[in-house]
Image 1 (cartoon, rainbow, N blue to C red):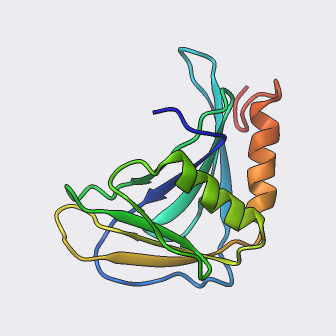
Image 2 (cartoon, one colour):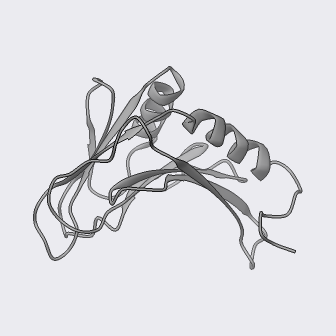
Length: 155
């Protein structure tokens, strides 16, 4: 399924309900160049948290949202920015949902909540993240995928 420009990935492990300190989320940036296609992609992921949102920019303009590690069969995943309506999907989020999350974050959203499930546990895992510094990292990802610079840590 083809979507837009930023990809939100949520990673989950463990079970139960817990959260990170929403005031101090640290966002890590990773750059990738596909060895077979030379396509560039870049992701921004919260360093801490089990159900961590990850925003990925791709050179080809695609984006999509999914929960990585939320592998309990047929269980929905959710993401919510501030007090906006939580968005829910089984698998990939729709292009409209991706656009809504990005718009909310870029529009000044201060907090992201994620909810997912991981095999073999059937307990909700809810985590909270601050968006402080997130848009700057997302902008750096967009800039890098359009450049010809090598990936950080390569060469």
